[in-house]
Each structure stands twice: as C-alpha cells, then as structure tokens.
Amino acid sequence: MDIKKKFLIIRLSALGDIVHCLPVAYALRQKYPDAQIDWVVGDKSSSIILNNPLIDNVYVANLSKWKKNWLSISTIKDICTLNKKLQKEKYDYSIDLHGMFKSLIIQMFSGAKNRVGYKDYREFSTLGSNILVEPKSKRPHRNYHVVKRNLDLLEEASILTKEELNSIEPRAVLPNPSDETKHVIDNYLSDIDKSKKTVAFAPATTWKNKHWAEDNWKKLYLELKDKVNIIFTGTKDDIDLIKRITDNDEKAFILAGKTNLNEYIELLGRVDLTVSPDSSAAHFSWAQGVKTITLFCATSKHTFAPIGGIAFPSGEEICKPCHKRKCKNPICTSQTGPQEVLDAIKTVLELDS
Image (cartoon, rainbow, N blue to C red; front, side, top):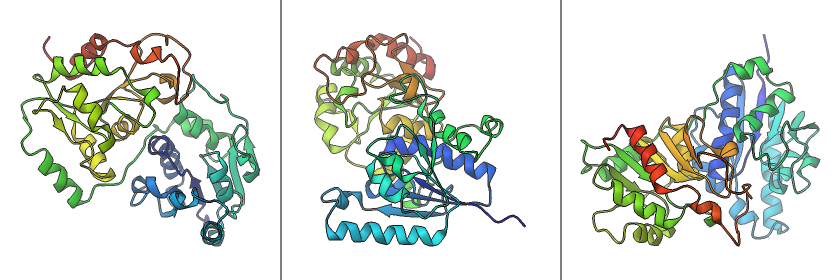
C-alpha cells in the first residue's frame, strides 16, 4: 500500500496572491487525492483557507502581532510553537509560495524532508529551501502569469510532471459559504431589480497606483446606472471615493464596508460581472467563475489578469508596468478610456446599445 504523501503550502498573504496559489493545492489534490495537504496562512487572510475543501489542516500565523516586533519573546515563542507543530507532521514536501523573510522562518524549521522554493526569492528566504528551482521567468516576470509560475514549481521539483500539469485546469477553490453568510447576502440583495443584470464595481485597492482614473469610473457609472444593477464593493476606506464617483447619488447601491470577507466573497459570486482594478475582487470573482473585466495600471495584465477574463489596456501598455506603489507620473491610470470598457461590458452582458 502506498504511504499517503504529506504536503505543506506556505503562503501567508495577501488575498489575491493566495487565490493565485490555490491552483497549486488543486493540482496536488488531483494528482494525490489521498494526500494530506496543509497550509500556513496569515491571520488577516485566513478566511479563504480555513474550511477550504482543498486543505486538510490550516495553521494560522499571527502576522499582525509578529510584525510589530519580530524579536520579541512573545513572537519568538509563537513561531517556535508553530514550527514544533509542523515538525511533528513529518511532511514530505513544504512548498514556499511566498518567498520572503516571514516564510523563511516557517520553511526553514518546518521539518519537511524536501523544502521547495525559487532561486529568485527575496529577503534571504532561499536559505529555507533545500530544493531551489530556477524560475522559467525571473522577477518581476511582467509577461509570465503568476498562476503558471506557481504551478511550475511543482513540475521543476518533480512533484508533478509537465504532462500531468497540462491535463489539469488551473482552478482556485474557495470555502463554501455558511448558511448565515448566504442569509446576510440574501437580505442585502432582496430588493434588487431581478430583471436586470448585476455588475460589481470595485474601484479601489490598497495600491492607489493600481487605480483607474476616477473620472473614468464616473462616466462609466452614469452610462450604466439605469441599464444594470451596480453594486459598489470594497472597504469602509473606499466609501469617499465611491461617493465621488456617484456624485453622492442617493440611489447608489453601496455595500463597501458592510460585509466581512466571507460575505464579500459570497456577494461577488452572485453578480454577472465584476469590474475592478488588479485587486482581490477580480481574483475572487475568477475563482467563482464570474466574468471579469480588470483594469490594469501599475501591474501587468500578462502576470495577474484573471484567466479567461477581459483585461485592459487592450493593446500594449503605455509604459512598462512598474509594479510600484507610488509613481510621480501615473499616466497608466488614464490609458484605458471609459468607452472601451463600456463597450466590453455591453458585449459581455449582451446589452442593447
């Protein structure tokens, strides 16, 4: 009888990046259906790994606390406790999909026989791996999709063959919503006009350099608000931006700041289309099979666009995506015009002109 394999995936944050790593767990589950697949995730991102049907055991790292003082006695004690739990499992493979200092301290002391990572990882995190893989596309890999890069690690470490990976569709599986979560969203959507298509507008993300120009959102909203249901999503920090986009329209449907993470995911799974910059909204929607239109500015569409979705700019970028949080001349935020996006929305939703 074959001994079931044990895998540990290390990806601590952020939400969109974790979604891009979920296809690794899916591929492992397809190849090794009886394997034990565990995950170490940061506390702020744990909701999409806890109760995930792909994952057997979840270890939540208290990054919010650790980052305040990595050298405090309390932090060191927490890390040691976590690593002792991991070492007891005697993993066949630990797979570092994060590649920074905070994953190094978990990867290095995980006790896994084979500790896999890329050679171009940062912050000395390569020291944690004993199987270092040469990436097919090195950082910042602006023309190579991040999901493909993550899956390549399985091939190059001889966990799956190229043929096996090619036969598995890249999929990100999210936790099933609880009845309570579904009830909350049912209530929010109870008065929606069911005769119209529903579009989620998620105009903001944590990087302002990823934001599409505010005036473009205004024009898009004015053109569509009577044709479809538009639901604005995001956090409470996005509400001022949304109010400017809607010009304080009292009829605007704003759920930003009103949902927790699980409710947010459930909401995005209910719409017909999500329009957003490169953000978790786009990636959560892709994971649930919802159509996406993603507006790329500082990051590359070739790297992060939801697979099968529409990504703008439609042609070549006006400048090389800088992958920076700040820019003195963010011309990329205005490269794509509202009419292009409007035309794409009408095509996707089959709206009359």
